Length: 633
Image: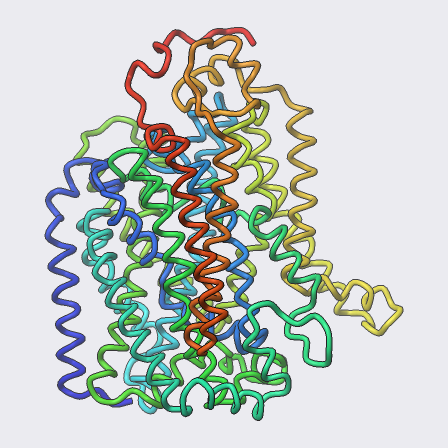
């Protein structure tokens, strides 16, 4: 795909605007660690929320969605749609608590909630484990996705640069502003990059659907080209007939277990979500930012990607075979490639530059966030806490810049090693690794008995059990997998969803046993946490007795109702938008009307609970005066 002068002008203009916005805040970011990592806690909800949306709109997501459609049809997206319930749990149960904690990173909470050497070890280990292992996987798949886009478009016929050089250039461009300007530059460029990326995806979706003859022709050609083509358009998978795109048991695992069992998208909040909640002005802004993020994440973004994924299946039918029978094809024949293949086939001069900028914006918004977040763990939770405890604010802000550079270099190395891995496969690996550990991070806010040992057991157990399952799969592969054999009976272990379920079950059992076999945290630590966070519910009754007068959160039950209603908004609006696209206007009216009713109910519920309470905006007198923690329980 050849670029012309107008395409280059668009690309150069994009970089100029991005660098200007990012570098504008370089001086402000180096005042202190708080400025560099959480913007001095000054974000409004619309900026923090849009930054969250932009971060999750990476260069890999359109490719992964088209890959899911190639294998399981529209219903394949339940892999991430099922997380919507957990997302709303974050909004209504945890957003206020995180902002109230005033932490710089989510790992900092470890030594606020727990005490002693186990807490210190946990914070240190998690910081290093996250930066050098867990974070490298998403950095590699996001950068690898951008590499796939460029190799399928600009460098399809001629590649003057090696993949290693291209990776270095991509990460280097992002590093210029993310390393220098911190969270201020990251968030402001996120806001600009998100709307630009959405515009490009919408343009490509219209072009792709028009190319195959419109929506009706798309449906007809899908049915003629692929067996069970009609099922590919179903929001809920068909569980009977000859062309089942997703088994019932897999769907049920996604709906009922995945949203809470996997720590990859932790319902209690973690990583970049916590960082942006911590960057908000107050608890009300934190809640609204997270709510806006979740609505946009599920209801606004997906359909342009989905329509291009459909068009790719019609234009390049072989993609479905790549998805269903990967063992028969080369490692570079991946279903994820359908999206950039459509760009290469359809984009005219001018639009080529816009679409490349679309992916560059998506890529840079995510990598800049991952860089800043990883550096915050490296500096705040390791370097400052355990290596260099004294220093000026400017020293630690500068250290954050160095840490960002280290993360970019490591990310480039891992990307080169994993560049041929399927994005959807990487997604599912991340969902399985750490399965079950999320339950501890949810309960530690509302149950006093959780200890540092609980979290250590969950983290270690999930990793050990995941590795054990992979070893079992390898061993079973050495034997006959025919029906009736042990290998044949256990072949379900090869399915990532079952791996997640097994790892989660074993992990939960392990950390519960460890919790009751080890002593609880000291009462002084628990009381200090209770007075600062003021969690509601019955799980802190023993601590409430020794800390009377603390005004805790009320309406926990109504907050759970809000979770249910807000989840219903997503699950009605999502297919409702699809119904509009496919001309099913009565169905669209019913679905979107239902979403509107739920939105009105949610507003009334929040009004009944009181914006002051749901936002957590307490006056200083609302809580009991801080007293010296008791030494007894």
